[in-house]
Amino acid sequence: MQSIPTEMIAEISGDALRGAPQKYSDQIKHVIGTGKVVLVRGYLDRDAVHSVRETAVALNRAQPATEGKLIYRDGCDDIHNREAPQFRFRDRIRAKLERRSLRFRRFHGYKLFLWNKHDDHCDQAIHDIILLRNRLYGAEPDFAVDMTKGFFTMVCVQHYERGGGYLTEHSDANFHARQGLVTHFEIITLLSKKGVDYDEGGLFVRLNGRKVSVDDFASLCSVR
Image 1: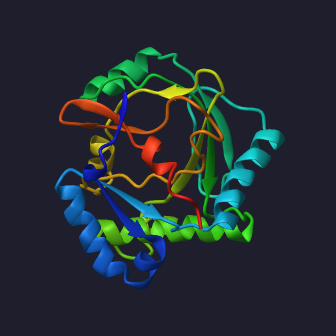
Image 2: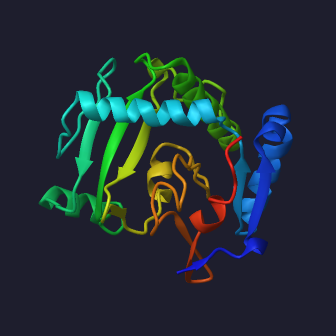
């Protein structure tokens, strides 16, 4: 798999995005519409990235991983689960009804909920990303923050196991449509660095029918 061509990437400063969110939100949507990838450098600082990672590590140590169906309730604790490539009959039926392929995977997921208190840096990072998402979607700033309004945000930190963690190629378009968020982009926050935390694999996208690695380029973008 080759690295993504530089002409297919648009870089935006995280400070610039924070300073003029509407201007750059419109620019991001335009760039995405042309089929390019947008990399925002430094939207989260080092303390924020470290805090989110350490929150997931602490949850791993405090709570054995669960497997199987998860149930989310208002006020529930954060969840540590392990996604494994085993599908029951209901998974296959659901995939068929949603007109999508089964998503084979192997990774640990750390579900963080807004109603639980985390480190200040972690909670600030979560709310900063939610605010960016809502601006890009054209939603109210508090969309999916207050559960009494019908939706809630679940932050998932995905940790791919050493030596074989993975998630197969997929699209979340159907999921977004069911939530009333008809968009053509995803916000993915990179918490690891290729060549430091791992050597092979990483985030990829498909351009003109060809898989290209985003992490090969993104790893060159230092976190401020």
